[in-house]
Image (cartoon, rainbow, N blue to C red; front, side, top):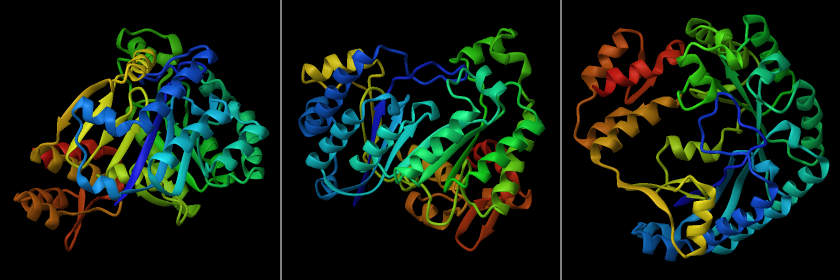
Length: 388
């Protein structure tokens, strides 16, 4: 069995206006104690799990770790020695054959010395928070970087040997227009990153932007948001342009040049096991899901006391597993083997899938069901109908 490991670094230079993640802006003096706590969690995970009531299947003892994802937050803020230390802890604790090691990085944090140190540490994939090529949009979103930083950072990464770069874009930022979106797509494609993620803006009441929208305010560009129809158009334009540029659309929000699909993220969508370390990190054993406490200071204190601060620990019910199989499986453009799911869970999906197929929302081909490519923008409505 191959296992994925996620390591959470919940620190940022500033909080994006649309962000509702459990991240914060803290003094850099907090970084080292936090990294020490995560190292301790990794190296003592067996004892910590046992004390917290987390039971891992026997198959985990023979598992080999083949992907690591260091996310956040902005983990590229850490000193490279901290990242090296985290990866060293993983290597000494687990059987490893690391095919993909991803680091989330913001453009303004990229420096030659850092990039070279990341490569030496074994980091071979950079997930790049570009979000937009428009300075107006970036400023409104509270991002620290500007368009020029993107063009400055990419050559540095490539010179250091980090050629597997994934770019994020957000469709629906404040002040975004059809023209500015087209320009962002054009510039992104011109840089030829092997992987692209396009996320449609979701207004969350837990973010500053979301609260402003809900109260009818105008701060953070709340009154300059594109409409839902415009965002759907932006997404469809991305589909078309990325396809012409040779990108394979393999998951609702993700495109890759052949062979550059995210190995780690595919584990999530395929319901393969992964362990999460750090404050707020989530884990999945195949039968159970759990998460660590979100507050970094409380997390670090608990680990120093020999306690794993688990906030959520639940056995995944058969009903939940079925819903995850369908929801996560259909996010993948290759589709899902619904006949297998019917056998495994003793359910009949065929009538509902045929109804959705007749409505042009789902395509059926033998045992496979997949979302119609033209209807990916309304995928949530399809999921709701299917799971009723």
